[in-house]
Length: 70
Image (tube, rainbow, N blue to C red; front, side, top):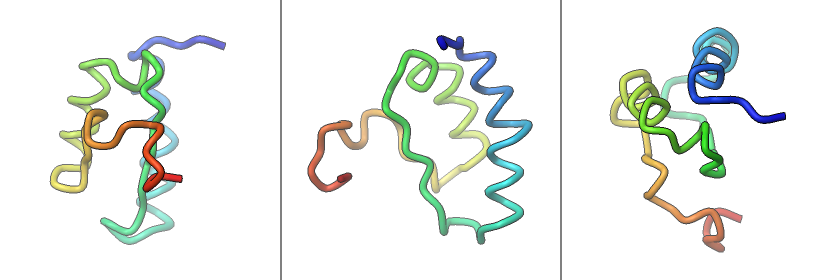
């Protein structure tokens, strides 16, 4: 299933981030994305920067094939 950035942001805002915040302390979780088009979209990156602040790592910080991520 393919989704666009708006649908992905809506899912993050309505489901994923509230659940993470209810179950984990700030800064104690990592939301790793694979840079699919909806993940790497400018709107998604800006939304996550706004929501996560200093805990946000942009999609360019680590390449998906980095052995450090695996």
